[in-house]
Length: 215
Length: 215
DNA sequence: ACTAACTTGAACATGTCTGTTCGGGTTAAA
DNA sequence: TTTAACCCGAACAGACATGTTCAAGTTAGT
Image 1: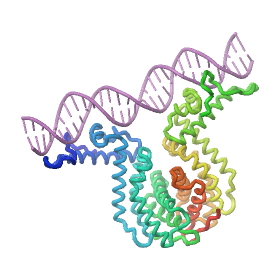
Image 2: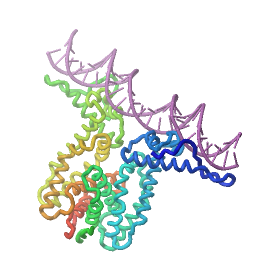
Image 3: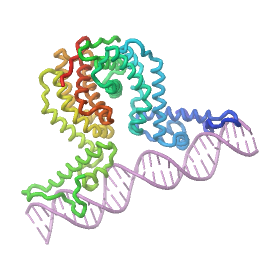
Image 4: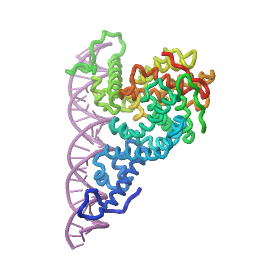
């Protein structure tokens, strides 16, 4: 796919003073093609080979290695771009107001992404150090954490379990739902509601009454 | 590990002058060694090679292939044995009485196993068809399902979400906890309590009051 | 002693991946 | 036109994994 014509492309940002505009445009297009193809193939098979990815990108394997000097580099770039996209979407999500509703909205916005890129994350988990994955997810983790925090202070979320664990629960259920959905065991369109309903109950303090979900 | 001293001896240690029973006893012992070693290595690295497993078992690679004609065969055997062990433990767990307490007991009994064999399951998931894994887990899945069912009929568990999903939630949280625990983000000894507390809340019907956990 | 069951290391056949090198293109700027 | 930045396919190097074959043990039962 993609398949820019033959030949040339330009390059690096370090062409400052003397020369003029870079002919980098081609390279940029190729990089984009490669990342697109990588997402596509890794989504279907976390073990897709670099050769297959290059072919799918309509690019020579050598060219690919020119941009990503190792397979891990490539996977890292794919993960980073994906997470950034997700983060951008989440930026547009209102997380103010009632923490329970904020969480529900956040789940709604995240679900499509998690569902779609499930397998990419799997590939990353196999190939990249856990610490790196954590780092890439940092902003997103923090977002969830903030909501939970607010909910606890407002007394609507439970305070009797480690906050880290509650964050884990949120991510864990999202990914479990994605797996189930991919396996056909869960209705994709209904998943966000189901996840939110489960999470709200799970995060409610013992002794309190579980809120009903408003679809 | 294990490993009879290398020297020349193909056989195992001493064996009592047996009746006319076959000397398959050796083979059986080797199989056990192989499975033990496989569990050990796969627990540390889901990609451990057959050669490494044979070496760790103190057995020739050829011998291993004599018993498990393919890597998938071996992984399957490991998974099956592990699940059977887990099932045996669960058999000894009382699942009668209040479904909430039954679930709590079941989590308590399962936790150690899940925690310990986390990585083995990961290896299986990579190597075996999902359908096979499902089949192997059938009895265990059914056990959880039964408790949830009882809880719903008794009106203590929620009835507004698919039962399949609730089962997923149970397994998902157990495995998420195992990951966190392995990563040092969750106190292993406290995990069972935390999981149970989370699950009880998650399974409680909207409008009802979340039960407190009794440790 | 003979045999059958069981093991073994070595070596081979195959396959697949990653990463590199090489010689030869294409394009756009200078 | 020359040249720099970029691209290509082909082919190689090295690694490592899975299975198989082989010729040569070892041992317990008969």
